[in-house]
Length: 207
Image (cartoon, rainbow, N blue to C red; front, side, top):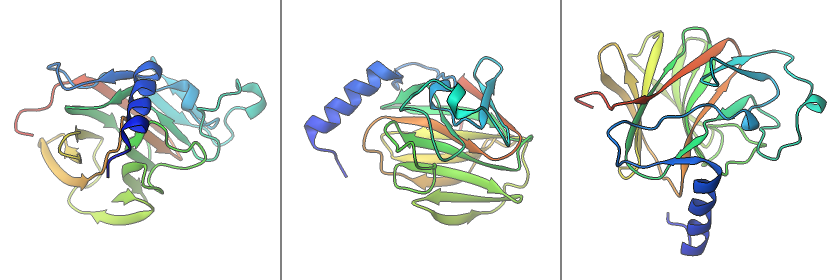
């Protein structure tokens, strides 16, 4: 579904100013860091803002700068670079977390929401050693991925696709058909352990 032109232009213009915007023109894909201003108070960034750790208690909300961009109810953090076109690939080390979600979200996703529970995000989730896709709180099981230490994500903006990649075999495990309405950003949620992102990568040959 297309946005009205005026709203779509305003959203893209705002995203270009607020986030770096990655197009499909460069040989390398999107390069990003995690945006601390969006991170829920239970999350802490590390390794140059490329990794995120979950803390049961987290920071006292009163000690955080007031920021409308911060997720208030769920342990979510967004990347700092939006995508508006092209094919982009990044990887996530997931071996130190048993409950997490990874994917992409609209740049203006509600900060009272969680990725995967509305139609503003497209997500692969892992909980209790089982993988699922998530969209608008609907789940579908993913088979054949096992318990990887690292996974890849392939975003194809014009084709409206987000794929989960087995990095050990360089194979697509599952592809979500999306409906992007404007700029989207890599998005992450976790409820234990840590995730580490690896961006600025070329799309692997064969994908």
